[in-house]
Each structure stands twice: as structure tokens, then as C-alpha cells.
Image 1 (cartoon, each protein chain N blue to C red):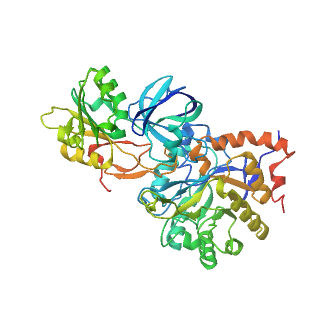
Image 2 (image 1 turned 90 degrees about the vertical axis):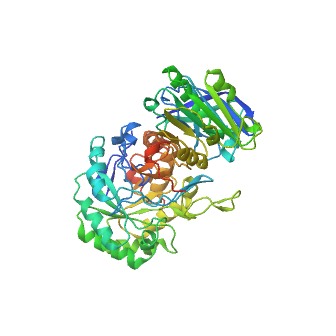
Image 3 (image 1 turned 30 degrees about the vertical axis):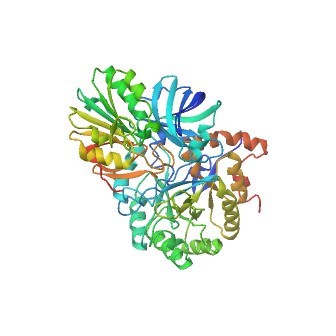
Length: 244
Length: 303
């Protein structure tokens, strides 16, 4: 973990209520895909944890949806400097992927899979990506994944684009070695039940600190109590207990 | 440079800054950020007889200048703390640590305290009779003078180290509670724990916290803490540790003027992991600004 000051390089709307922000600064502590950063905002007490979409040693890009006060404040920022904690959370473990990992993202759970996909490709794996949304106006990042040269299946609940239904409706006939997923809790549960291989599931929870001190975001797992912020947000399929 | 040393219940502290229980884990994780030996000491995560998961999530809510937490004393239980957490701490901390103890009966307080009393690295026992997040124990002890007296007396009988009672602000008369601790033989008092609070989500129209209520902390409660430290330090002879919303060296000095011998810093650690380090490093500058040669000389300075 590292605390640092980042300059806002860009902050653009990419879909209804969804924004992409690029921050410039020392991002060298970001190691794994699936990590998050924690941003201090003027006038708000707690930092806001946002997953990493892409990172280089000198920049980090996030994609976030406006869901409350914090993200609303962020969405109106054009420039300036932010106090950010980077290198938070465990992230995804690439070593377990096998040759043909399946990446399943839902809504604003899609962004962290982008950096993961890039890293898997750099290790000569052949990922397939399923992106699930409610409707066509919410679709994000389809082109980003296509530009990486991977197979992308988009699902929409209302059938306005791609496969009609949920991400699990797109599983038929797919051959995969491992599952990496991030999205809303009902989607994670559905993926858990519908997929046959092991995998890694990224969770979210209201956090206090974001670095393991306050125990605000704890969950029970078959491997003992874990803090979503420090021991997660990525849990292995084998350890998950569905409490909610 | 001014003198920052203070004496807390017979043990000298290099400075009066102590990370508060529940915001600093068992210390070793913060040692990744800085050398925690620069702290006065720290109070470790509230420890109970049995392991506890705590309350269901969500257990954190944002507030103006603070937060509500309803963690509910998640901890691995006293045996694991002694066997697993303290050995890890020993590798990165060479000062005496403050052991924070919670319980659901007098027997439990005594059991946990007497085990931690035998640990060499423990300097003080801080008895939490004020957690707002657990039913049937915790705070109910801290809101009744008879109970507080009994807990204090029983723990004192079973231990040899200084016993500090951590008090709740959620009472009608904080002074009478503090006096009951002193009568029971307490060596010190720390206050305040969190204020009982609630936030409601306008979208769901339900409380944000799964447990509905939780403890409100952060800079918003600082004036309440200063007032209570002032009142209590005026009424008892034992040292008082001031807690509540401290986030700067100026706050430390104000709390000491109110009557605190040392201070605990809580919520600030969660926003800025370097908060205590920065406060300690800034203290000499602020002491010089206000012409303070020695911090121990300003204790109760406002009385």
C-alpha cells in the first residue's frame, strides 16, 4: 500500500452515470489486477474505494458509476489533485487460470477484468469474456476487450443487445479452465452455481479504512473470517459462504 | 525541542499519542507503514474470552466529519491473541502495549484480563465497559455505577498491572461513573468511546448499518470529548486518557489542557494510516508555537 497525490488527467462520461478517470502519479504499488484504490474527497470523511481498470507505474485509470455522494463529487471533477491510497486488496491470482480462463463481469464489475485480461494475454492465455448489462445504453468496454483480440460475448437482460438474459445464459458450449468474475452479488451467486470449474470472485462491501485496520468489511469464509479490503476483495470459489 | 514525555499510571511514555483500540488492529499491520515504536504506545483491538465475528455487514456508515461503526468486537479471542497476535507484534514493537479487554460478564472480564496480565509486553489493561455495538454486555456495564464499580474491583483483584476503565459518553452523568471506577480501584480512566448514532439511507428508507445503530466517532465528536475529559479530570485524582476526534497536534494539546495525561487517536487512523506519526512529528512545532516546554506541565491547564 502507498499513499500519494495524483493529478486528474481526464474524467469523461462513457455511459449513462458511468465515468472514466485517469490519474497521474506514483502507481508503482499496484501489482495485481483486481486491486482497488481509496480516494479522499473534500468534504467527505471516509475515502471512496474504486476498483482499478488499468494501471502503469505512473498512472491509474478507474471506471466508476455514480451511486452516491462520493461518486457524484468525483463525476464533476475536471482537474486537480487527489489524495489516494494505492495497492489495496489482494487482486486476482493469475497462476490458477489454466489456458482458457473465462472472465465474467456485470455492470461496473466489468472494469477490473480489463487489466486482468491484459495480464492473462501477456502470459499467452486465451481468455473469453462475458459482459452482462441490463440494457444496451449501459454497455461499457466491449470495444476495449475486442481491441485486446479476445472473444467477447455481451448479454443484456432486456435483449436490446447481444445475448438476451443474464451472463449465465451465455455459458452454453463454452470451454474454459477457470472463472474470474466481478459484479453484483446475485450475479456472483448465479455464476457460482452455473459454472463447473474453480474460480475467483470479487466482492464489495462498505469499508471504513480500506487497508485492514477497522474490520468494518469482514465476511465469513470457509477459511475463516476475512476482511474484504485486505484479505479480499477476491475470494476463491472454494472458500465462499453465501450469507446474504 | 520541547519535552513530550508523560507518565501514564507509572509507565513513562515518550509522547502522549496512543492509537485507539479498534483502529490499529494488533499493531503489526501498521508497522508496514512506519516504525510504530515512535508511538507513546497503542491500544490493541478489543479482545474477548471467545472469538467473535461481530455484527453483520454493512457495519460502516459515512457521517459529517466522522463515521458510524458497528463492528461488534470482532477478534480472535484471548487465547489466539496471546498465541498468534502478540508474537507478531513483538517483532516490530519494543514498548509496552495497552491490552483492550471486553466482556459479557464480570467473569469474562476477569478471565481475559488475568490472562493478558501475565503477558510481558502488556503494560496496561484498558477495560472497555463502553462498546455500543454488543447486546447484553459491553456498554450496559459502563452505564451503571454499581456495575462499573464491580467490574473494576474484580479485575483489579485478579491483576497486577495498571487498570484503565474506558467509558461511554452515552450516560446521564459521566462524573458519577468515573468516580465509581476510582472507588473500585481503577488506576486510570479513558474516555470517550463512541456516541451511539444512526444513519438512514434515503433510497432504501432503512438504516444503513445492518445492526441499525452504531458508534459515532471522528472530529465531529471532539468538543464532546473535551468537555467530558474536563469534567472527569476535575472530579477524580487518577489520570485520564482523552479520546474522541483527535486528528492534529493542536487537538492533542487542547485535550491535555482539558485534563488528559495522554490521548488516544481513533478514526483519524482509518482515513490516514500515517495520522499518529504525523501528529507526533508535528507536536514539537505546535508546542513551540504555544510556548510549551513540557507537555506534562499543561495537563489540566484549562482548569
